[in-house]
Length: 335
Image (cartoon, rainbow, N blue to C red; front, side, top):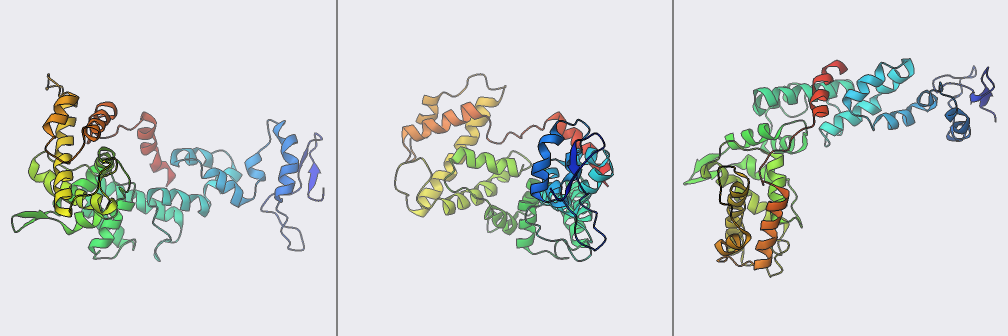
């Protein structure tokens, strides 16, 4: 084989490193066939560095399966692994895990590693000091406009996965203003329009919403605009009626009113079933009877009750694993 040779111990190795070139200037990087032919013998050698033998593009693809704390460990192994961990392909992937819609770096940011650092720091500022401070930080580096429009701000809240649900919910709640005796928010409306509830069972759609944004307070005043914009998006995504109802969609006003009322009923059911202070829990029969005035079948209401009973509170925040918390503390070492 033209590009393969033998090690001093007799085991075949690839004849050149991915970054070496022959004297005529040609690329001496190993081909996939070279690598494939050498794998069987390399697997028997405990000291073989398989990652160092791959072209940088393939090695970066392997590294993309690791998260940020693991990338930090990879950088400490050896020079070749450090080169892979510092490649633009790896840092572009890590950055887009945090902000999937970020297609390219702004003009004033020179590398994807710098972009990742800015996204991480901006998200940290937003989660600590409020989303408005995070928006200003991203604007200072050109990730969004200096005076972002409602659309840009909604895109940021929806797309940036490093923003905590509490940060998003608080910022949306602060955008609500009272107008004509109703609580309105253009930002909340734009944010809801970016959610996708097509074909999603109503309790699961509500879980998606509250997992994405944790709204402050528990009064009906604070939850009213949230549910109004949520119901509007749910109906837009399911124009034929709520999935699972097995009935034609009612006129828009009636359908909206029924789903809006049912959302309140689901929240009350969640509180009833999972509040330790409530000793006498609502039964399935009682839930069906309490909501019989709406145009939903007993079977549909029974499915809602069973979903909340089996899968937990609608608005209960998800817990993070100890490894996730450790990883957050170790990310600072990456920079």
